[in-house]
Length: 282
Image (tube, rainbow, N blue to C red; front, side):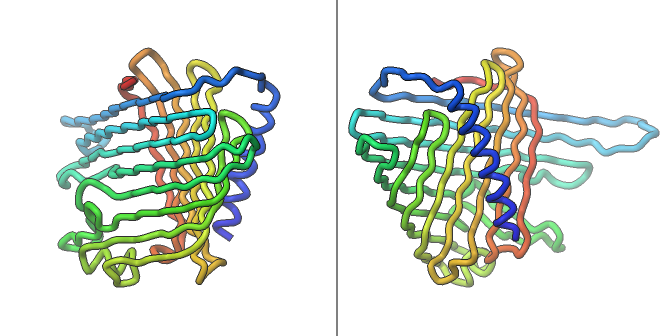
């Protein structure tokens, strides 16, 4: 039911953008070669209370986000590489500083153009984090994750569809490895193993739509199903709406939904609303 609701919502969004984009599509002469894009953002908030009778605790938080793409588009092939880095901390009251964001994600996709909408591809992705993560509900705190603990790697090959410049999706056979280096992480993420290998099918859909010079929407839906448990689908759906208020100031809303029955029976949700500095790297 959880996966059904997520996918139904996503494809409703997909159909909407397909319709909107089809209304404004026009023939353009392709431009071949490397196209690089990179954006870095830094957000910071702080609260300080002194003799404040209404109550409250001192707090601060910051987060750094870097998103970059390096795409080599040629007449017969397309090689797309991307990197996403997020790291941030928060502190409330007398509690120590804790992680608010921590992610390193790399993706490389090579597509061979057949001259039709459906093209064969091969892809490699990697996902991990920078620093240790803890379960603070335990006393003392318990380490539950770290750099490459877990680390996720996926290799896939199949067919991709790109009906226009804003929407692309791919479906193929996939091999997924989950690597751990501690007993705790092995139990939580890899069924007690140092490395868990899964064979299955992967689907990835990207939406990148610029409403105007100010407002941008990006979405990435990733689904993986193990062949041994075809009815259980791992889902990661990352959505970002960003508004460029000035040349260097951006407001953004990020909503990320994650579901993996091996880790939790319930879906996981993370939402971040931020205003901060933004700078184009390329």
